Image (cartoon, rainbow, N blue to C red; front, side):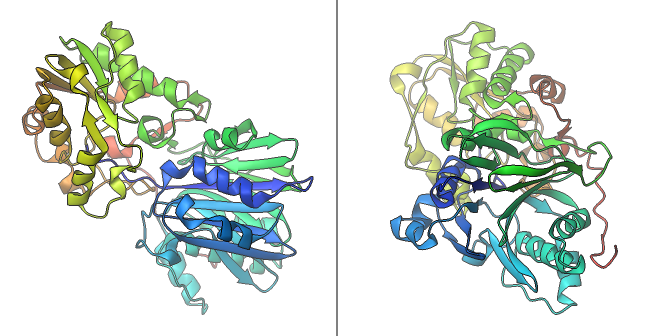
Length: 469
């Protein structure tokens, strides 16, 4: 079950009462580490300057005591954890991106994928701008700076005009050298972004779990297309939209299936509840004559609990997980990803030997690591393994920040489900239906993007010239 690559995470804070934004931003990124493990960075606003540090690696590897101390004390900060869906894995592609221009400087953290970034880059290069990175996030930051200058230094107008030139998925946090913290969520709401508050100030985060970890009370989600500004720990601008149109697509439904932490609430729906709903739906759509239910750590655990509750079967621990091994998709080659499965998950023979098992996981992408997990269970003595998957078959690539493999490498495009069952080595195989998945997530306040499952991608990826308007 080769896992999908995630997009990124952003965290930003504006404080008062002498609190330190650097330490809080670091803590927020630690809580969001699951969303990106290629690199991390923090930018702080101090005395009209922007001080930043970023590098490849986990948050704890990039920021030791020396690096945190080097940033100094500040009231405003933005942070970023990266999984690269565009550009290579190098330090220059880590966020946040600091861009200087005639009237100031900004630090921009971006989660998502701007599909017209290459055209924007060409337009900016025609003006003499140079780029050191190969990812779309640097292009976004440069575009914002350009539009601020075009707006004669009007910060908010420049930021909004820039956002209207972008196509695709983007949650943006922009810290300015004058102490403003600006958040923008794209008009479709592809990626999550929420607001928190405590007595010391306010924060933005990709997921509410980061607000909880840093002592902020969840206030609300940033609405699709909304622009929110915080200064001195208080909201000074909110409610303005980039467009009055309703979302054309909506939140990536895979946030509920896999990306988000189970203790997060996204657009009104608790992620753990959504996954348990998926499991109960699977039990109804694909029941199994079995003795127990096992979830594949981590994102299969809640779905397995839902399957067990709905079917009346006991939920047992089938694997012991090595907590010091990250999500296997972070390894650069397929061989390394498959090897990581061996050292990350070890079957618990005492619980599975002689049992007919329902194995619940979130997805099958290539189908290259699934056989290893199934074989491990059978080697541990499992009599039968019935695989249940809490997402439909992946058939289409994603343009908006989920690094789904090329379509010819997706196993669902290579063979029918019966042949997938044989290749993986399970006794039966059942995927949740698209209708069942949507019903499991029905409490979400937004519609969903399901293009990776359905191919229904009606987004216009036409050029939006930076020179117009």
